[in-house]
Length: 360
Ligand SMILES: *Cc1c(COP(=O)(O)O)cnc(C)c1O
Image (cartoon, rainbow, N blue to C red; front, side):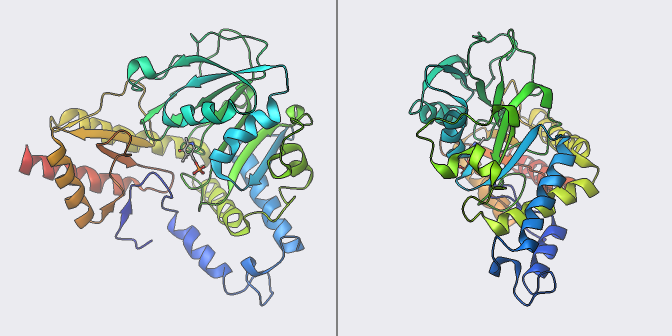
């Protein structure tokens, strides 16, 4: 992306500039071969090394030991809405789900095709402005797992911390829009997953992290490409994996390592979102009513829809794109993922202040 344009869209998102440069270099020549990395076999030793390197880097930054299986799959997070019950919900058992919002709801709809799903709590009664407290939701200790979306991209809500549940139950989370911006409390999770195109890399690869002890008993109907056990045994290459997206994601993991790791990325996410919320709360033209606010997807309204249209138009003319809220909730949304620099947020805030001065 041109360095003068700031992409605040919910995804696909911007990548670190140095990663784009590295990717460009890989297109000429790869590992001393005349073919580029996207023109060689996924069975080629040099590509297998790409996968191994990406996996090792991700494990280092999230602190995962050998009890964890990392998978790089196709199909998006949406694919894993089916993948989770197909791999973890054995016939005769139930799983708990929290209706956290747009994405949590889609996960429930899909999972119902594959097993007995109990919706144990919903953010609906709070207009999806506040996530149900994990410490207070009813838990059946016999559930195969409890699923929730850790950061609701559309609704702009997030679990700030992952509170202890009343009874222990394996947690499974859709982390698509917060991957790498939270220090994961790994001991609390059985599995987590996310599409790369929000925080991690280009669209096409979905990251699944699962405890190895949970592998080995997929449902009989589980398609091979969705089968975490088979994919794990084949280093995510049961079929041809999304090679270029894996390479790019690996470069982003290394970029995170070079920039202070996940704790630093989490601190930057806090800093960027705090500045935006402080601006929204300070200037009467803007508002956000979320009680559990997201650090990566900052939704806000202006006082009238007319002003929102004008705001979006002028923002775009000033090189700030993708600020329109999701059609389901309207308004505006600034997605400030991993690669959005603090200066980008400062530019947006200066524009918000100027717009308010002229229209307040
Ligand atoms: C974007 C998103 C999805 C859907 O991801 P796809 O890769 O398009 O399937 C699912 N969950 C969350 C939280 C998202 O932000």
